[in-house]
Length: 391
Image 1 (cartoon, rainbow, N blue to C red):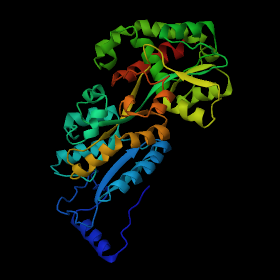
Image 2 (image 1 turned 90 degrees about the vertical axis):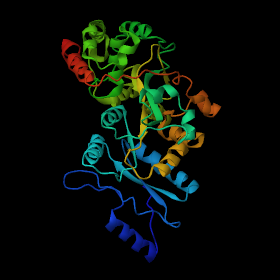
Image 3 (image 1 turned 180 degrees about the horizontal axis):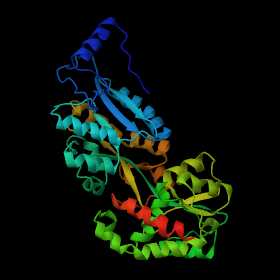
Image 4 (image 1 turned 135 degrees about the horizontal axis):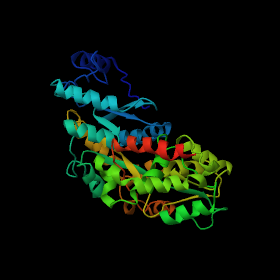
């Protein structure tokens, strides 16, 4: 983590005074509410504005920000980014709860200026009005982002990177990978035991295989609906999943977590799996998967989605935060995102160098987003009963 240190007694005294007046950094009171930022501790010409940035995820996410933040600070000496990393297992939802509590308690400002979250955090915060609505007059490079992703979230965040589920396969065993969902199901039947997907409740790649099988039988917009009435239309999809069960690895063994199926592919126990694009590409690059491993997308596509940068509406550092977000959407920063995370850029592919476009050509042809909300829990329950429990 990049840490800015004040080295003179004058600056140390200023920092202590600011702390007494309102506090820098992320603090919470005994009720778990966000501590208000002091809007009167205006930065002097010699003191940078400090953005309090909270994010979570795997170690590669932490590595990404430790690479990007210094680049931004070098270009913007008047702004510092204080990072607060939430390791895996520390849910992001408490941050949303704290922001909601701060608003309901009547606070006018908060000491969280930027937060990386997902669709769930956007939806939860939208109802309470805790996220700032963004536009390209504030963040000019927002024009480089596919507008459909911004419209889906009502411009309440910046989709700065993305990944999708794809087919990962051993090209020495699979010369012509399936190009459509129907071709995939045919391949599974013709190659019993050579395909695996993980328990959908334990990882997104298995979840995407299940969602795709179910929602391919429904109208296109159903995949973004959280109307419980949609569940009555799941029967054909579950019948397909149950029918495919005996053709799966071990005649119906479903590994735990995304890594479980990647391990089976690495060991040669299966020849094809659904996998997150970033996980597969990273493990190919690090030689954790055989060099013969390739990835491809099918039609209709598997699901995927962006990670979002969110600005709390009560932040007092919006101007500085907007500069950071604008930097994040430059091709320079997005190359770091792609090369560090092995994911898709937040900006459109045509804005990226041609070499990267060619490198990702096999998987960069789009994906669908599943946003069924509470329906996902019901889907997993039914899968456990009708598919996993069918053996």
